[in-house]
Image 1 (cartoon, rainbow, N blue to C red):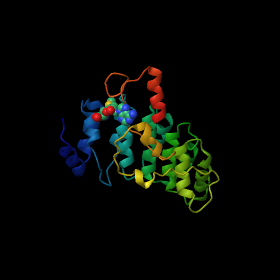
Image 2: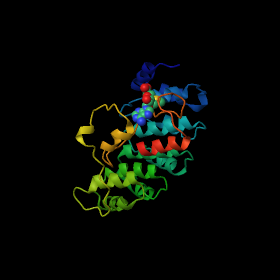
Image 3: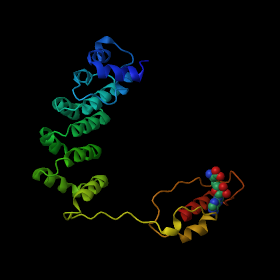
Image 4: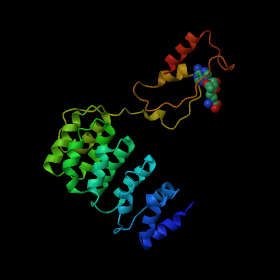
Length: 237
Ligand SMILES: C[S@@+](CC[C@H](N)C(=O)[O-])C[C@H]1O[C@@H](n2cnc3c(N)ncnc32)[C@H](O)[C@@H]1O
């Protein structure tokens, strides 16, 4: 196990030693641990040591290699990461590649990102949207982002709505998040759920966390039949 402090030290001093630790030919059994411990990198850090890991057989290593390329303060490896975003089989790594491209904040990536807006994975599209929002003042970027107000994915719709609705009209309205009435906030209610729920207005619950009664396994509530038990739930919810 190589201590984190040591990794941070060799990053600061010189990256020759780190490159050696990350060299796949060196057969370092703790490659994953080293990659995970890297953290912030100096501005002039040469990330070539990560590039040699993007074809590594281990998914976790490839993921961290792509992530670290995104932390570098340069778009020198833009071609490498776009290649990963296009050709990598693992979905998580493809998403990480897009996120790394976003962190580069490079105008050179705009054509690729615009094409990627058509990806079939909504999480990829969401990462692409985040990356492109940096350039929302470019007319063509702005237009294409605004078109996503009609995207089938709700998260994407809502990001576009938030970004553009204040200044411009987005045709598709997104339903407003429901509000809870004041009397329901920060209270503990001790009662029979079948009665107390009558006081809770419709469309006012965002999340339910429950430990409901078991079916006749304890004596706190006995149900005549399983059907009755399900009826109880239906009423409560
Ligand atoms: C599985 S236990 C949950 C226990 C709870 N998580 C705790 O740590 O005390 C189900 C609980 O639901 C309560 N319960 C049963 N019928 C109820 C009803 N109609 N309204 C409200 N609570 C009910 C039972 O008394 C029991 O405490």
